[in-house]
Length: 170
Image (cartoon, rainbow, N blue to C red; front, side, top):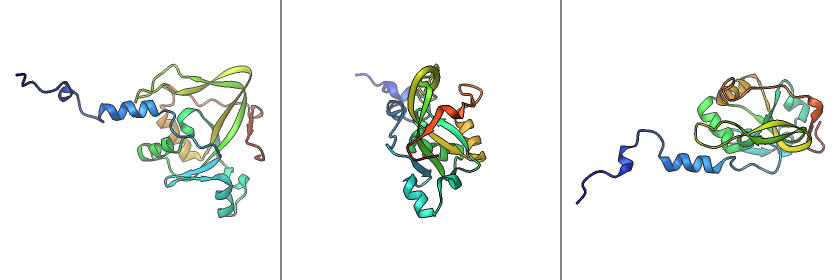
């Protein structure tokens, strides 16, 4: 009879291994097929949000920095996680767009939870569909911390002429 504990009993502390594996396998998580505004309580379709608030798009986007939402940063699930873990808060417009002369590719680095994230790479003549977030100063700071800016991530300006927001958006 073998009285030794099962191998799992020797693992260190932290989330159960299965939970981490499922998180990595779920990447990039559910991404809506429409532009929306994210808040900690969930996502609201952009047009409905603007109508309910009596805003036009330019008012909502004023003073914000446009950041490409490659991979999971377009997912409400990931944005919610960043609210809980990095203090990301407030209303975040997440708008469908097309970026010219770039493509979405795998990053050269794994995330802390084991997925291989997306990033952008120059690719002349290519048009990639993606989402962009519009972040205020505090949101941009929280996002940069969540992405380990300067380690595996750099916030690099793109030529705005290469980006076209979804039909009907300025």
